Image 1: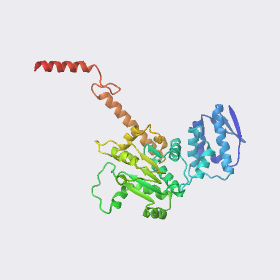
Image 2: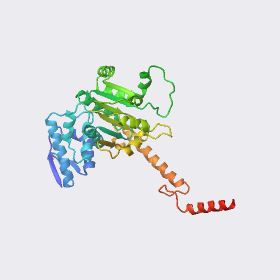
Image 3: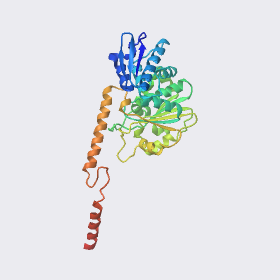
Length: 351
């Protein structure tokens, strides 16, 4: 099927730098797009051509209504639209315009980020699990700030386990707050991006925004609050159970973590890993999983994460092949068992 769309003013902005958005549309929708002297010609399956045409129509509508795309937002929205048949460019843009994230206007940059935001809006407890750089903590803080600004909650509580990343810092001087602040710095950074620094400091002084180690949560009931537990992969089983049972009335909780970066001692099992197994079928909870395609940092971060995942898979495969008496599925070979029984029988009779 072929479809021609008349060229309208500023259409070239839709194609992006060096036509990167054009290639994104062609790859994502499996169509070919050609520029003619007075029209854009789209060719492909009827359903795919219709979706591509709708993107052009939505872009023209947004342009006429005065909508302005900032900082690569258009490319991010197009990635979501091409991956999700139910999403439209107009719907994403208008939803983002209506949602207030303090002083920032944010758009989900991937389909999983969109599902994550929707889950936080609709569900009282959400687990965000995935590698570094996928926006788990940043988006959670953004939603918390939006809830506070719009008076849906009375306070924000940010918690984190005080566990060093692979090293022991020993005794730290200063007050209790000065001791725990280094562990909570990423949460402060996100807050300062969402709100004016003076306002953040004022809300921290009034305890409207509370930042504390997870150890301080025991015994509390958190009502009218938006609670975020960051770096949850470093919680123990006991800490995780304690945290998820703190939820009070009119409150939301978001638990984020990367299960590939656990800094607990070898003898301790991650509370996040355990919770993902125990709570997966509990009504009212949502689990959102991210992968390297959701990384919103430098493109190199995606490739680094992919390289580590490939190396881990190779190491696990090699281990299963090298273990004696273990087959390719990691199960011990049955043929060794009779020999073992005979050895035990001979040993008992020799005595």
